[in-house]
Image 1 (cartoon, one colour):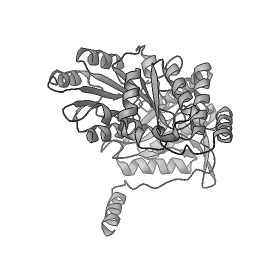
Image 2 (cartoon, helix red, strand yellow; image 1 turned 90 degrees about the vertical axis):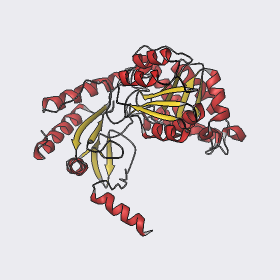
Image 3 (tube, helix red, strand yellow; image 1 turned 135 degrees about the horizontal axis):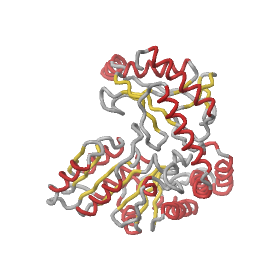
Image 4 (cartoon, one colour; image 1 turned 135 degrees about the vertical axis):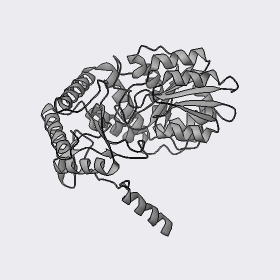
Length: 389
């Protein structure tokens, strides 16, 4: 194991060594770490639902009725009533014919992409897509073509030269997880139609956040369901639970049940997780108050950062990156904020490209304005002390 130790030492020397921080208590706008209370600015729990009483009540009720584990994969004997109810609820929420639940967003991307394309096919992927999309494309055996971030001209150039492939799959995050910006979905839909391609959209960070009913970026841009569009999303971010879904036409879902190895060969989600997800979708679709609060807090915090001299975009998402560049300086920034009672993780390669290390700030609907004011002030003070603004 000496070579592992050497590699770990190299990571530490480059400022890339990672360890785990332990939260003592629930996932909320304020958290306890090492007996210290901090304002939490790095959670994907955008609507604050992960500790919601209705979700907890639904999960507890499901445990009492169905038990804890599901016992097997869905195709053996692990297919239980709440799996079916959750999939029906997701399909109604997303306005699609059908849906299928996976155990995580990583599993969903791996399962879908490797099922739909293989040798003789091509995947066209935004360069800043999530790592699970990259891994799935590489594992599929299809030719992997990456285009510069949000560059539709380059994507079209690649598609023009793709007539020799059996299938073409365009893949994009709808909200990019490290930059918080939006994919140009209308152009992606247009190019998919023009070049007879499937379009796979990862709505992980948009579901529950964007759109009038929180259905995601496709709703936000007014994109209607189409048989060439495949939607994926997670149940672990704004929805506050766990797992992931894929939805689209029924033929797609039937195909995935028969072909997606990440679905076929894994034990089904515990039904208590399904119950909490159903409760969350009912809240999200039935009441826009949390979403409105989130949008207000996003604007409030972005405006605060601008007032201190930070360059911040107007994107309507809760993800706000502060680019630092050097990995060591990004982690020093994060450490100093921690001392001031503000929890923001530094993000380093390989999660982001070399030279683009950053603080990734995320806003929750349940943040209080006084805490956001304090946090933005601490961020500004530390940045000034480090010569960043």
